[in-house]
Image (cartoon, rainbow, N blue to C red; front, top):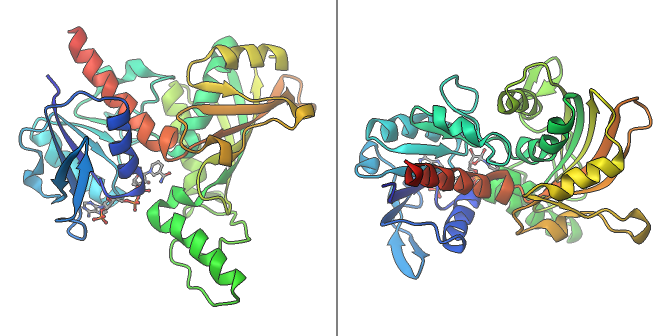
Length: 337
Ligand SMILES: NC(=O)c1ccc[n+]([C@@H]2O[C@H](COP(=O)([O-])OP(=O)(O)OC[C@H]3O[C@@H](n4cnc5c(N)ncnc54)[C@H](OP(=O)(O)O)[C@@H]3O)[C@@H](O)[C@H]2O)c1
């Protein structure tokens, strides 16, 4: 039985939500431990009414652990996942480090749940901007193959972790009070501004965040012929990423058909009444697990094109919810054996 759990990076923005989701969803477990860096070791966490002391992550941390859910920076994930696998533990990892490795399934349970069967100890969860997009693409792609996607993102500051969330709030206060403020999480002031760069320069003028959307989408659908043209922008919103998504399909999908496909899909909520001013907005989607879709309309610039607006809580479906759903799949797959 998978009954002994470790939460690695338990004190971070995603780690906190993983804890909350495990409680909310009554995830079955016998023992649980919370791991972080030396900085947070010794602090206390209350989980399901019991107080736990955060432990420092070490190579010995995974003895007797069956499933580890990790949400640490890439460098820490690179180091700890092999320790865990060596100890016989399955790692569900949120970081970017393992996602594109050949033997590591990259899983969004609404899209490619069957991929978990191929794991060799590590299963990755995609980047937050990719996850909500592929959930939205899936019912359309099943109806008619998606040949091309043009996506622009409006990404919240919580996507850069706890420090990103704080930088928007403290930076905004400083601007309003006419005080100086030193940016740490972002290269530029984010309060009252937009930053059209997320990640480093990677390929032909695209950033690392943008190329993640290209490679991860192709890997999740198992189809390298899907063309993706992304532009990723950091916006002064604390939580929930928004995206404009334009898809070109093999046969035309009308807005009415798309609406019906979205409405039938578990994990998607349609909010789409332009006349009444109803569409998904970050403030309404925060703390929700679904991917929200609105502004569904024909792409009038392209024969088989459809365009829509998509919002999701980057810390939930974009990270913690997806990881917990993968862990639930593991538990269910073992129960079925
Ligand atoms: N934020 C999002 O929307 C989002 C979405 C998808 C994926 N992700 C990915 O999820 C991961 C975590 O992101 P986050 O936003 O939660 O970051 P965060 O708020 O900065 O939290 C990072 C966590 O990792 C721990 N950590 C850092 N270095 C460590 C080390 N050397 N050894 C052990 N633990 C270490 C931190 O512990 P301390 O408290 O000890 O520092 C903290 O618990 C990243 O890889 C990120 O790319 C984030």
